[in-house]
Length: 109
Length: 123
Image (cartoon, rainbow over all chains, first blue to last red):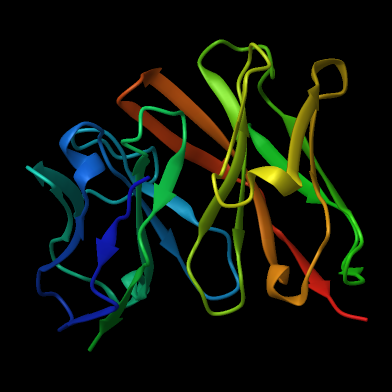
């Protein structure tokens, strides 16, 4: 099996840049995807693959990866970006299993 | 427009079996690059992947819950069904279904998600 580790909470000043990280062995083999979840709402995909944004996701969201760490960067954070962010990838066990990180609560100050 | 919608009971008793249905629209469950997963989230906690069904009817289950889960699909009805046996209060959670698109084995993403359905386990 595999685990993905995220910092529980991160804060950023309005308009500044913030990086949310996700660590796990599976990230050496599989791309991460990132999801934004606001209170009472379903998760929404914000980044997938090397650095792809679904239609409708602002270009201030970007993704990167190095070794066993994937990162989600928000350049010029807005108040509406305050949310929980989850990373996800396929499990590195070789079976078609998927795993989520524990989530990062982003506060925009 | 692709949508998924979960339906099922809001309250189940301990030891009962939960049956949830995910009704999809805007894509076919026979599309080779797409499948549907069930994912849950206990109140205030993180997301947990439960099970997945591929277009070819191959199924995959969370190792920790495998003995309690069954996933199936009815392509003609555009529905994916998840059953979970022997429900316990710790299974109280919002249950989501989500479409998984896989281009290659190392690249996949869940999009979109259903609105979720809160299931409470209590006597």
